[in-house]
Length: 190
Picture 1: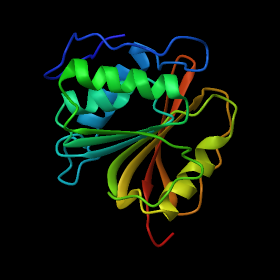
Picture 2 (picture 1 turned 30 degrees about the horizontal axis):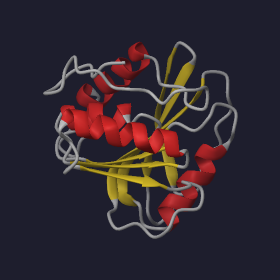
Picture 3 (picture 1 turned 45 degrees about the vertical axis):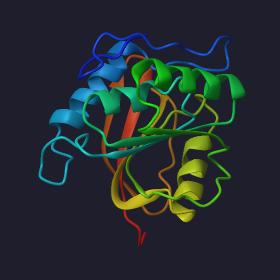
Picture 4 (picture 1 turned 135 degrees about the vertical axis):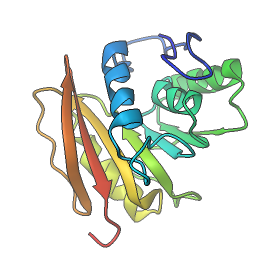
């Protein structure tokens, strides 16, 4: 697995060993980042990545966060419950020289403690079919992890039903092979 573009382009990312983590396919990740860079979701109608504070739940290797940092995000917070995934994400941060810009926490995204930063770009990649995405979004929003107006992306299986939680508005969905990305805006008063 490699970083696709930006200042870390071509750099290798480790993935946690075993079957607990399912990395997003490179083509799907590339398609999503093209949308984020050129889809007009930024505050000025440009890229949503520049200066973003990223939150990645069910982070695994942290590939989404490290790609975002490579393309101009300001900071990234990674949450995962699996100690192997947390260790792998920390190793990736160190190998890319991103230890100062990342915060990696072993935490259940469906039962988070209070957030210290309200993030402007949020990505969740729960296990396919688990129905944990909506539950995690509600919990993270309630605990202050998501900024009003934030762009939120949930990755689910292409044929999986996703129940949009209250306070989130779907703005686009895109399928790439086995993955479907549900892009939403968080409305704090929702």
